[in-house]
Length: 333
Image (cartoon, rainbow, N blue to C red; front, side, top):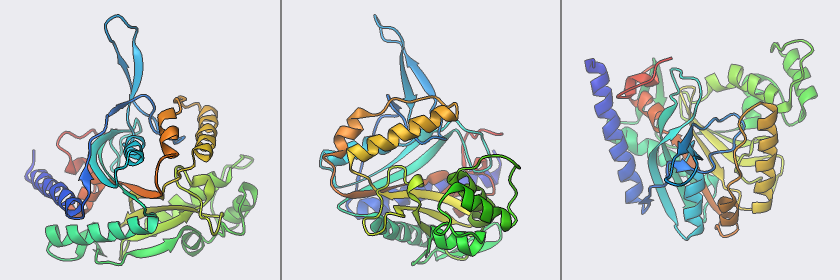
């Protein structure tokens, strides 16, 4: 192991210690939940590694390595836990890249009786705390970009970001054909004759024109996504055009995904069934719906939570261009 990577791993270890200290000081309880689960995350584009268990006297039973501890942590909230966090390994069977590993480390935390605005404040506080503890200041330099981590972060609505950087108006063009026409008019290239949904056009514009511009010179909190991208977030009561979801970006790198959590089991079942239909269209494996989670939702208080990629955060603090440089035994593409 070269000396640079050794130093990165030492800094990573200190960063994780400070993450724990930040939450413990605020009265959070650290929890552990199972890695092996009967139902992993349902998001259409996620693949969970399968595991077959062989119990004596029984045939093999299929389980999955979790893609996130979200379902289990929500069940704890339904049991009365108030402020909980977890640092754990998660698994997503996707292509290995400079920013992604099949097995990686995730930080998740949840607050009962809170919404996504409180989680935004947590993110600002955590970044400020870590920068002062690790960098002895508020400025981080990543691949030549100077980023100010002192609060407040930039807060940017998704619709505004798409207008500002993508030059498209997703409020005026709320369906696939109209957004596709505007995106083509603004110079984005699509295969001729192909059908593109609203989400597909959105993500092409977003990934090409918007995402690289986020998180510099301040961290960016990108908030309020279209309802079709709500996942497990609730839709805004005052404006159903938007879901209470945000993502955190630094230097163009997506770090975290947060929700004001949906606690309506009927609506959540509809979303799970919709995601199953989309998985079938995409020829992805169909995962069983977590009935225990749906039952727990009816007992959950209003709450909010977030998942943050620890390895990517370590990349930023170590000024490492590839995720492999902050891992002990990395996978290479």
